[in-house]
Image (cartoon, rainbow, N blue to C red):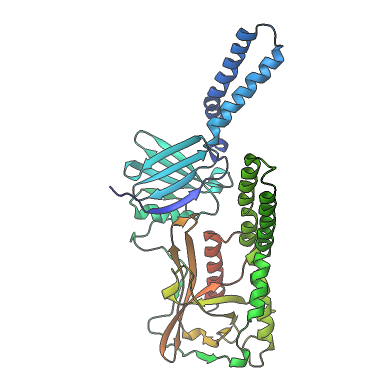
Length: 418
């Protein structure tokens, strides 16, 4: 028996999922403990106090007791943590003294159905599990790719159904609809690759990088300063304040760090990236021999990453710049930090979207689905492959589904014109 099991997918249910999917009959069963507590406390008060308490006070105390019981019952089901490993799907809810746990062994499942949000009329999706003697329903937030989850379940030999999705013939391969390949007998033209003059390199210089870091992390620095001031104040008044106040204040200060972290994740990175992209555009327009002269037309800001670092902790960006399709000249232009390319359409051997799972799939803290547009074209030395990643940012969390969408958008920009 393994001490630690590898998790293939993890996520957290939408808030109050279990409560939101109940029908009238389920709600009646769910509130039985609260009703019993309400009636029981009311009867005890009547027997203990006789007629000393008015009926409305007895009713209020009974209702309060029922509400407390109901909250205790519901607390552990407000938002459960879901994990998928090689043996089972587990749902665990924790609310202090109250916990909930359900385990569904994969080998006992007769069917498993993924239902999209539009099919069930909710802003989240649903996982319906069926076994011979029992079943279960698990909520799936919109940030989770159902196709990706279905593929993982299929690879674990679980019978899974999802509308609009078919399992691949080979369980070890992905279904990839986003692939372009040149005909096998096509004569590939050689692309032009030139180095940018050293004087024009560095689209973003060190002072601007520091400014971008400050734009992303200023709130964190200010928050840490505020916490340091608060910690000093608590220390100076330690003889006046009680241990409860000091401990509570320290916990509140620690918990408040989620605010600057959320700022960095949701808007800080966006402001930083937008600033650097604007600086880089101005530098490109200032180059006398730049391939891209106008940004009035469609363009994409991209990072170039070699395959060997795709699944590294921090993928190594070998170049950064702008890519533009010149449909009238049948060329793909790249103006980068170090190089500039002129890629005729007839030079492209292959273009496709590839996904690399780093860590655990889903919403795990150490998991990330990375998506690259792999462009292979002919150079003097032979076929050259590079991974393209959209460098533009959007406000909000950079989820797996967003990375997938941005990769597909880049693919759809490049391929239809080839």
